[in-house]
Amino acid sequence: MTNKQVFIVDTTLRDGEQTAGVVFANKEKLRIARMLDELGVHQIEAGIPVMGGDEKEAIKQICKMGLKASIMGWNRAVISDIQHSIDCGCDAVAISISTSDIHIQEKLRTSREWVLESMMKACEFAKSQGVYVSVNAEDASRSDMDLLIQFAREAKKVGADRIRYCDTVGIMEPFIIYDRINTLREAVDIDIEMHTHDDFGMATANALAGVKAGASHVGVTVNGLGERAGNSALEEVVMALKYLEDIDLNFKTDKFHEVCEYVSRASGRFLPSWKSIVGSNMFAHESGIHGDGVLKNPKTYEVISPEEVGLARQIVIGKHSGTASIKAKFREFEIDMTEVQAAEVLARVRETAVQLKRPLFEKEIMYIYEELYGYPEH
Image 1 (cartoon, rainbow, N blue to C red):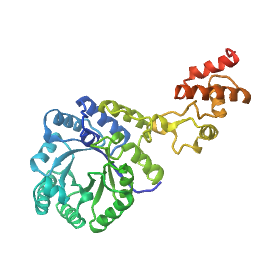
Image 2: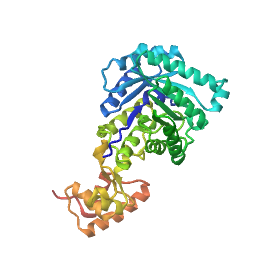
Image 3: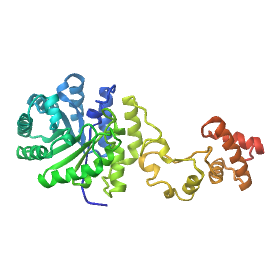
Image 4: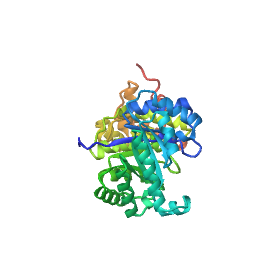
């Protein structure tokens, strides 16, 4: 495996909870933090301390859990915000400020100079408190490149440990992001974190393109939870790095399904069966050709094994099944079928699946067998 070290920064508890309508109970926040730590996440962005109340209390408790992961608090470029993060016991702070002209003019109603000055003052204060600092360039993907380079240079001068390149509105595509990150890396020697949104379905692809161009950190959320269309998904990024980029982060990936299920329930957001990496359909095979191939050798149609992400393989019996799948399914019931029997059962299976508009349950398959051949003898 490639020696390149990539650090995973999980923001499920901050950006994930900013999904419209999502609220985590404090107990859920603590459990999610523990689960992320057990998976192998390097840094957990635990929330926004300046919100106070339950939010600040949960972050304090996470900081006291003795996790291996670094715990980061999210802040505006305001010294009092950072003080709240320090009070909680965070060992890292994110200092976020907009760098695009549309944000500076329309949202902040201020100037580029003010943005640079605010960022530098906040960063200087945070470094004086001895914490790790990520300076977040919000809406970096719509920012003038010269300003972004100046922003990174000034951040480095005042001691920032990394820059977060935020594709805040998810408008990047991998080829452009590769060029942008490459340009930034060549101009300023500072760690870069990819923080990508999925508005055009390219959050994970953009994060990987950034890593290819030299970014060392990737911001993610479990299930790709996040504002609007969400963020790059933790499980997708980790597995794609391992299998497509040859970068193994040594995560306990067999816990992925459990963690994704838990966050799905805690967030009240349904986990689709077709979700990449952890959806139940990832290892479900119905098509006759696929079923036959997988039964002979799973690698014919599976790049990763189901056990690696905490799932199990399913051979689904339905309209598209073939005789190999039928015979394999009946072997599970300790029945050895002839080719003729398998063909007869398959014809009835297909007919029934069309009527019901779905695959068949095991009992329904057995009923077909019993109607054709009577009760099996064991």
